[in-house]
Image 1 (cartoon, rainbow, N blue to C red):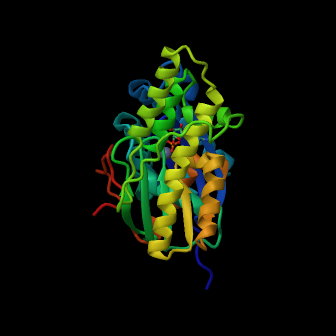
Image 2: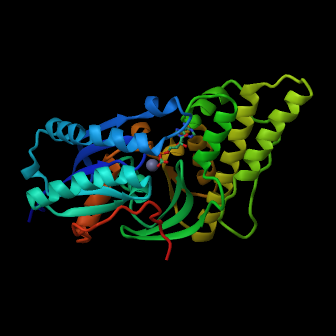
Image 3: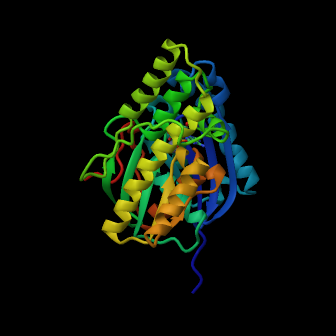
Amino acid sequence: MMEKDLTILGIESSCDETAASVVRNGREVLSSVVSTQILVHRKFGGVVPEIASRKHIEHVMPVIDEALKKAHLGLTEIDAIAVTYGPGLVGALLVGLSAAKGLALGTGKPLIGVNHLEGHVFANFLSDPDLKPPFLALVVSGGHTSLLVVEDYNTFRLLGQTRDDAAGEAFDKIARFMGLPYPGGPEIEKLALSGKAEAIDFPRPLLLNSYDFSFSGLKSAVINYLHAQAQRGLEVKREDVAASFQEAIVDVLVTKCKEALIATGLKKVVLAGGVSANRHLQEALAQGADSVGAELVHPTPILCTDNAVMIAVRGYYQYLAHDFATLDLNANPSLKLGEA
Ligand code: KG4
Ligand code: ZN
């Protein structure tokens, strides 16, 4: 018997991207629309929550309309509406969530509440058609750094997470300190291309007997280095600072992933979250995984940073598990991933 097609509308508004997407059967992207606010927030050096909420309000319905139009579908042809309900900025989350609830109420279609971080992980199903749990996942975004085992489509077991700054946050803070624009990750990566990774020996904070991370000491070491050079009137090679800092973060991430691959015996590791766009991280982790007999999967560039395709893909698997939400679903800014 032929299975019925499942077409999901995904909606995402957790930070500074308003996004909507239509995905069929968790694999076929019919449309993806992302309206980014990066240039609006750049003037302030980071995301201003109040401005983000207002921009989401302006953009959410046009973005949803465009996603449906590009998919050549009407709302009645959608099977369910999947929306990010956390983690993220509460005001920003509420805009997408309210829009989704309104559409669910108006159409009678089921509502699915999606964890943004699980969405990032599930973007990998579009890169690798053979990807199946169990696998290891490294989530590296602006607000989170977590290492977890995806045991099945709906069970996530946290191995470790950052105790202070997230990897993306460290990139953004160092970039800001160096006078580079927001978001800092891509700027550091660009600068690092012409620098020497071994030029400055920044610390590799490796917490022993733990899969946790800590990047605030590394961040301070970079800032102290820049201060000390300035005080001594010594020239700073910004490219070298960027490359050496990036190398230190990547080293730590790769080391912990290798340890986890060996300990769990898992043969695939997926990268997820905005920092997964970093080419050096992708290459180093691919090599690291290969050295312990495993394989890396990472999202395509546009699916690394925030988007609604990943929300629709995650929503598809929740639909299959009958994991539906009621209309009293609230935004949860500190929603956790894989914690008991
Ligand atoms: O997942 P994401 O788009 O938003 C959150 O959910 O936080 O991640 C944004 C983060 C920012 O910290 C940004 O600087 C970082 O991802 N990022 C990168 C790169 N592209 C984005 N970090 C390093 N290298 C990149 N190429
Ligand atoms: Zn994200």
